[in-house]
Length: 163
Image (cartoon, rainbow, N blue to C red; front, side):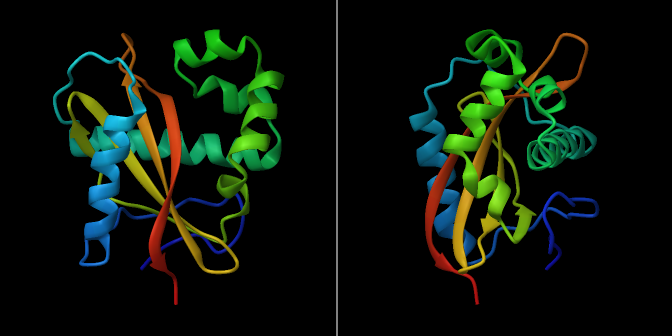
C-alpha cells in the first residue's frame, strides 16, 4: 500500500484497486456522486493518462492548500468554483473551515476513479492520526484546452478504520 506519511507530499501515490473493504467505499462513491447534484455534460471514461492527470491536479491542489498557497490552490478549481468564490483568499478560507481532513490526513491514497451518470469522480482515501478513515470524492471537469479542474469535493465518512 503506497501513500503519504507527511503532509503535502503526494508524489508516487499509486491508485489502489477496489478491495473487499473498498466495496463499502464504492457504494459510498455512487451514493455521494448522486448526492453531489453537480450539473455536468456526459463524459466518456478518461484514459489512463487522463486519470493520472486528474490525480496530479488533486495532489497539486492539496499540496498548495497545505502550504497556504491560496492562488495556486484556487487555480486548480473549475471556472464555476472560481466564480462562486470570487478570489483565492475566500476560497482558501472556505477550504480551511470545511475541509480540515484534507490538511490533517497522515496518509492518503487514490482509489479507482469512475464515471457515474456523466460525472468523473476521483476518490481519495484520507486516514487521520487517530486512524479515522474518510473518502474525499472529487468531481472533475475537463476544460476546452484539455486540462482537468476540480468542480467539487465532498468528504464522506467511512465505516472502515485503519489498523
